[in-house]
Image 1 (spheres, rainbow, N blue to C red):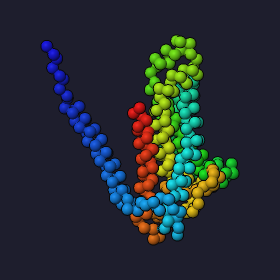
Image 2 (cartoon, rainbow, N blue to C red):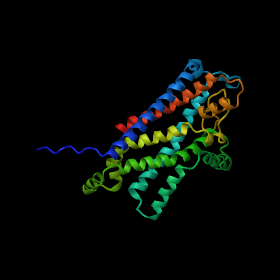
Image 3 (cartoon, one colour):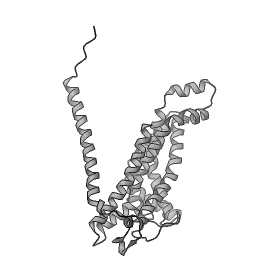
Image 4 (cartoon, helix red, strand yellow):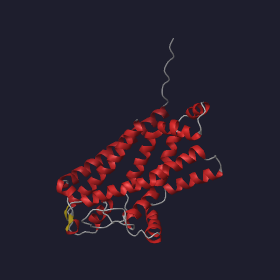
Length: 279
């Protein structure tokens, strides 16, 4: 005789209903915001808007330098944060002995993830722009955003490493592999997609930041492209802020089109991270 299925308790049913309501409510709100941005800014998107240089304080022309500057700053942030963050997480997870020092380092990483971005901007101004003499440049902004993104990359990489079953490591050790071989041939291939996804999420956050680049190298209107990490640059977040608050006569359609462009770029990175996490 087959056992009778256990009926869900009333409390469990209510909790599941609340969770489902919150989830679908969040989904609908997100889709509604995307649709609203597309409705307000879609009419301003054109080839000239995306590929031309700005003119007349950005009121005319396009936002091509801001798009390229945003791509540059994202790449620079990744060059700083991803290698250092991944290596630091591997050391803390696979090599460092558990103890007070490791717990303090992990606590510091968690705390750094909650530091306001404007604090990183002021640190970047003092350290990279003034002390190291990099000046207001793409390099100083990349280093600043890289430091801000480091805690996110380290945390995401540690979570991916800890998700690897312990048996994988023990089996490799039993076959005579050393720790370096275990990490390179057994642990990292298993959690590679999780590490990449975490890095992309950190970079998507850096792409939309304004405060750290405000004092480290971004320009209001710059009708030319950056030529290297020593150049000043435009960036979509700061350009959007200036266009919406500091430029009289700026058409609202251009403001919403700029916001939509930035939103699409951030969503593209988050979508790629989501696909990698599923693999």
